[in-house]
Amino acid sequence: MHQNPILPSVPTHSNSDVSLRRTLAAMSIFTLLMSIPQALTIWVGHRAEGVSILTWSTYFASAVLWLWFGLRKHDKNIYLPCIGWIIVDVFIVLGAIIYG
Image (tube, rainbow, N blue to C red; front, side, top):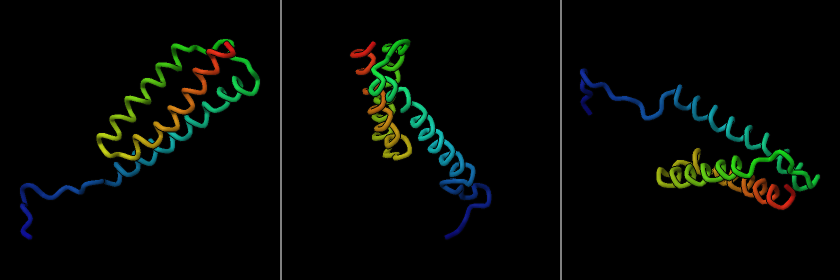
């Protein structure tokens, strides 16, 4: 195949893209894990004082939208973490309603 010297081929995923994807995936998992103590405080300790139902419902809505977007783009890096976020958000919202 002849390569155009004026328009060289561009790799589909540069090293910086791969590095960024890995960093974003790690941060998504990290922040999800950092939210689990909030859910445990609510469900194990039966305490939801100061937990904003509006805030966590907004996080839930955002996760649903990102899930939909990730599924449309067929991007596992987007939609897989959203499943975890939706689960945690639902537990926190329901716990805040029940114990708040």
